[in-house]
Length: 195
Image (cartoon, rainbow, N blue to C red; front, side):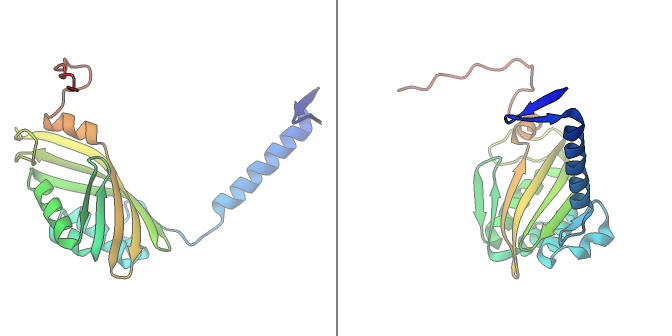
């Protein structure tokens, strides 16, 4: 039986052979070693990351706003995509991180994955903590446990992180903080905008 592909008749056997050859090429490419440095929850592999990125990962896991800020270049940028906020310079980044962390007791950040190639890198992490303080514009904490995943796409320079596009589950975080109703919960109707 023939299979018609782009107007050319090929047998089923030839199609399987072609797919097999493609799979072999994919396997060869996947197993080929490259210049990508990676880490998967292995502290000893952290030295394989560029120094600025290793510093950021270490500071995240220490939940230390001073070390977090110091891992950026002097004019580095932290863009929190989930909330549409941008912080430029070490002082602004430090103040933002300190204000966030002050809202929680038992804060912990577990970096589960990190890699870099050249001047680009990325990480994945999970934040956990008890919301015992009050974040700006949010209801006060009642000690509720909070957890959310986050990740960053990094541009890395010799003086530190140049740019961090940081992504996180903003909706899930706002629900856990009590700023939004839980999914499936009764929501308060919003007023219509006025013209």
